[in-house]
Image 1 (cartoon, rainbow, N blue to C red):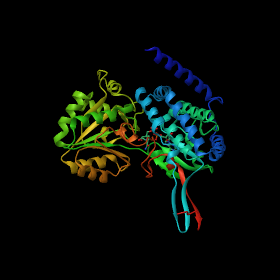
Image 2: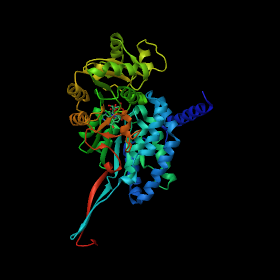
Image 3: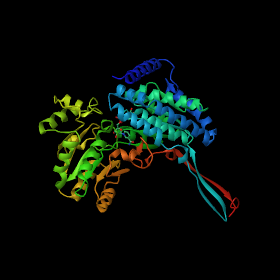
Image 4: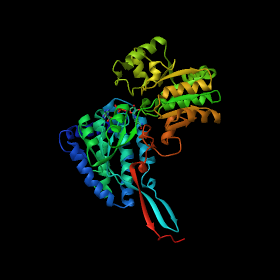
Length: 462
Ligand code: NAD
């Protein structure tokens, strides 16, 4: 272990110990014992934020960006240590991405019409206090990304974080409030309860001061939010298929798909969860995946053992989610070298390791007789989530047909899935992809209300 790594681990331990203390006391900015108190504090802070100029909001955001980069390694280590999921280098990259590519106040724009009858503007105004529910798979990434967007829109945020990632989440929330204070803003731009439960979530969803709820997580939470009677942004589950047709650069497709699938041990909701390939390219694809991309081809018997380990009668075995391929294989008694990063096999689309959203580097390959069959199978595997899908093809008509059929918020062509987050692709970053409710990739403007401001018979100076 290098000195640098040892030092970082000491800092992580110290911070974790402090936050453990904080869970019983009152330390940690933005952390409250009671959800009602958290909402009241965020409401008070929103009063200040709303009176601030856009420039002052942007100054807070720029300190958040700096602090996120400074704390990227600590947050990454805390996330992995607390949840047992994902890997540190990729989580560092995710935090850097959030810091650099989450839109700020530049996303808040005005539409104007001017003419003989005067001037009309449509402006984006804040909702007030936004309630947010966040996942354990990208805990601090989502909290920081949501807060930047919500703050740019003039809001403050109250979080009910995933209990399995509460210490990492509270560390991020403390950091966000420190950033605000440093930039001359108020405390409590982001708040949370120290012990999030379904009860605290229900209090948040029913509270009169919460005008909008942003839920990032699996199907349960999105359904709960959409049944709450409040306006909800639902960023739900995916099961993204990567389609490969006969026109693709097969060697590159193998590399891109494995890179995307293994990013943070397959935790991102956009990551490749299965492959559908036309018959004539399957052998070549498997060859490159095994010989060049560190994939382990699992036998039928190993697939069965993996299935009974990874899936329990109650659903996903959480001890397997976000683990690396070597650890997963170790769980079924298979020892492999460190360079193995993904488990692959060929199977029917109904295979449980293919049809289920696993969030671990297990990648089944489904054989299709032709492109039409591949599209049909990929659409079935996406389960109508309308979340993400990917394709490797040089045939524009094929890409277009697939895009229309699968109808997802994200469709990456000829690149790893993370290009959709602005990592090796154009565009901004978000960790809340509102697939269910249709906002798509959320940003500051998503967290605003449209307001029309009309000046009749005046202010048109053309
Ligand atoms: P999860 O659904 O277990 O938990 C997400 C959050 O919802 C947590 O804070 C949890 O406490 C809360 N929650 C769960 N059920 C609830 C209910 N009935 N009422 C209120 N709150 C409830 O998900 P997870 O394991 O943390 O994250 C993985 C899942 O989230 C995957 O399905 C993944 O695809 C999805 N996800 C989606 C996006 C997106 O942007 N669309 C981003 C990240 C993760």
